[in-house]
Amino acid sequence: MNEEVFRVSLEKKGITLTDVQMNQFERYYEVLVDWNERMNLTAITEKKDVYLKHFYDSISAAFYEKFHEPIRVIDIGAGAGFPSLPLKICFPQINVTIVDSLNKRITFLQALADHLNLKGVSFYHERAEQFAKKKEQREQFDLAISRAVARLPVLTELCLPFVKKNGQFIAMKGSGASDELAQSKKAITMLGGRLENKYDFQLPMEGSERSIIVIRKEKATPKSYPRKPGTPNKQPLV
Image (cartoon, rainbow, N blue to C red; front, side, top):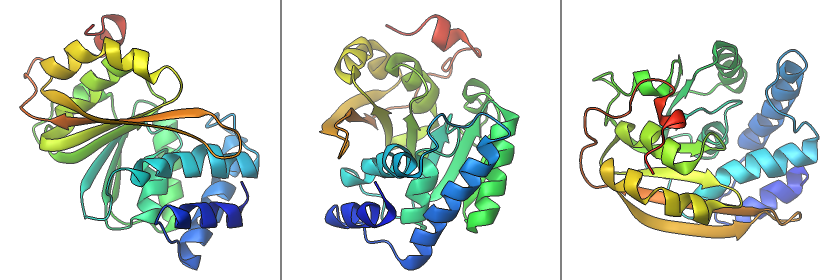
């Protein structure tokens, strides 16, 4: 997917990018590839693949859910900034908080935000399990989002504690999403959520399966969750 196909494809989905925004994506690609030579951020470095499998894929959440309001978004385990920073470029009014357990990735993200002149972004080097216990972060976000971090039962425990009542948790998944969702019914209910929507589609050109799982927060998450760092992964709520 080259830059023009990227732009036109988004326009067909109702997302029109300015030249400034297109330049931000170009700069994002350049900084990503440059830093990737010194640290492992992504195995995908071909320009056409980055635009399709990282940029377009990240923005696909906005094909189904609205990002036009100045909502507070938290991205758990964003790695090289996906999906929240491509969404931030498209929708500058959203406020983005990124939490990642590796400090070198946070260093990259801070440098990237400076290069792209992004405002309303915050980066935290912390485990999600610990960050969610902080009063100023717990149940303070309109939306928690995560892509390619963990299986859904684990991800639900890491993300739902950050979401305020009536807010949403969006999990961006590849093939196997239906099986993960079936395994997550207990976790979703225990942690105060309800499945609201599941959208299935294929990435253009290459046809990879994608699913966007939307969980609505209906009641407060019990204070005992998330459990200690590492526990959700070792003992998922299934």
